[in-house]
Amino acid sequence: MDGQDEMKVTELADDLKEWKHILLVTDRWLKWEKNEYPMIMGVSITLAFFLFWYLSPPVLSAIALAAMCIAVADYVVPRLEHFGFSITDEWSDEKEAEYRKICSNIICIMTFLQVSYQWMKLQKQQKPKMFFCGALICLLITGFIAGAIPNLFLIYLLVTFIVLMPGLHKNGYLLQWKIIFLQYFIDIAKKMRQGKLKG
Image (tube, rainbow, N blue to C red; front, side, top):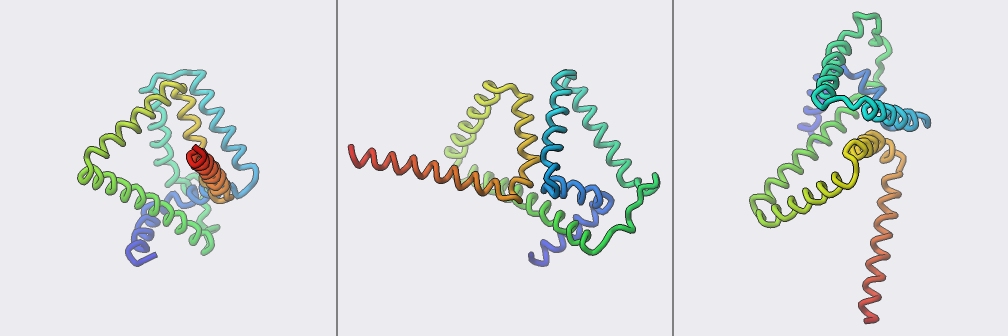
């Protein structure tokens, strides 16, 4: 990590210092520090979506409720010390290093998104026809999937995968699936090639 990235991490760590305890706990859950964490998260997400489906609240009401929860959390979390939940004394150098690692990961994600946006912008300028065709195909596929699968269930699958993805990555499951899929496509390519050679 160069000096500029280190400066960004330090700046972000300072901005999120009131949330550092929450971020630390969240990171441990997302990375499956204990074996029961993924099951608890999966069940919680399933119950939340089931409740949402059962109540079927209006879209604006759901958005307002989500915004209200965020506003309450933003007000309460920085003031936990005033409610007798001070855990400052428990902060150690090891936790500080873990916290800075979390901030570094956030910076990496933000950088990846910025680079991806700049790449798409460059492709639009240099290859407008190809960019238009690619965007049209992606949107058509997305529209087809959204029409074939109930939207709430689709969002449920997406949210579940995003929440479980850090743990899947840390435990090597994503790499295993990647190898399996690559091997599958390689086998298909070999069979197609052998068929052409025989023909």
